[in-house]
Image (tube, rainbow, N blue to C red; front, side, top):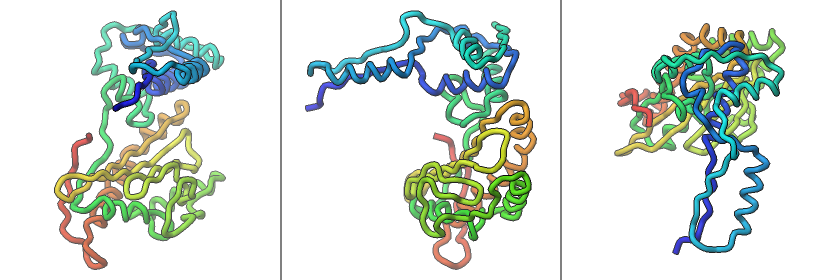
Length: 292
């Protein structure tokens, strides 16, 4: 028999707050779509914790859902202006009622190229992560991902990765000299060239956070999911959270190069995943897969 459960729900959480923060930090004047006037009910972290603690003292009974939030709804625009005030920033909002959802999606994609999945909850994302389907089990598909970096290289145009490392060294960064903490094993917190392992799940997920000198923060995530009839889907997501105009210029300026390198790297990982042994690669049934 299922136990009674208290469900506490509030707003959109980090999804909307990340978008609002990114917009306020980057744009002194904002052309605002209609959703900026949408009322919402923000709530402080301390209040959420208080609700969670209070739920522990509820007498056992039937399951209930508790909607929490401020008693006085405010618009997203008001939240943005209040955030700007507390940050000491002067910001101006110009509402445009004719900005359609499609144009709003393009606008957000241009101004907030943050982690790809963050923007999906409010507007449709502009691009899907790169995915490829391979004729291999999740363990075989993840094997080349687990061995990436260090002396093994990055499987495609490794010489460009090394040039990037030299540039980082000249700017006072860590460069590529650190290699891998362990040539065989990976754990969260390990160094991997100019990356650091932020998250690792065996045969499933590798997320790296960049530690080179950048006008923003960058991540590279590779994930493997089991497919049908012995196949697996490898999903690669490159992420950049720019700081200021320099970050935006950097992001869009090198986008074609990143697209080339990451596409080649993903294809090389797929070919290695389909290799039956130590001989030549088998003919892999590699094709772009739909994002799920």
